[in-house]
Image (cartoon, rainbow, N blue to C red; front, top):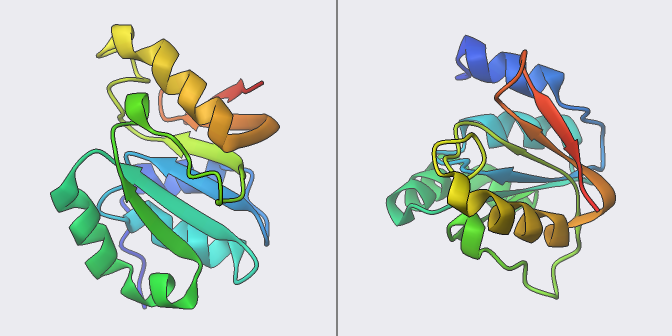
Length: 143
């Protein structure tokens, strides 16, 4: 099946430090295009959680990623990152990434601190957040 990734998303996904078995949190990931590619790269031992504030976006992600959801390599949560709390029953993530998320890219600076705190609680100590604000990514080490 041909890739549906745009050139920009391909550069982002290629820049992520992905390996089989990795647990990845994608913030603002609807409609799941990048998440599908990331899930393919982390394999059956890994997992991708798509977090998005849009209910419509999450519904589209679930439809586009049905095979990955059924296989257990992808799941979704509908919440804004600044209000996101990882369910305590869910294992922490190794890395997180975000593309064009207003709370993280400077468009809504008043939300940034809360968003970073919530991401840090969902990622293993020393885990990283990769933002599509650099060339192609800016990396922040969390906790």
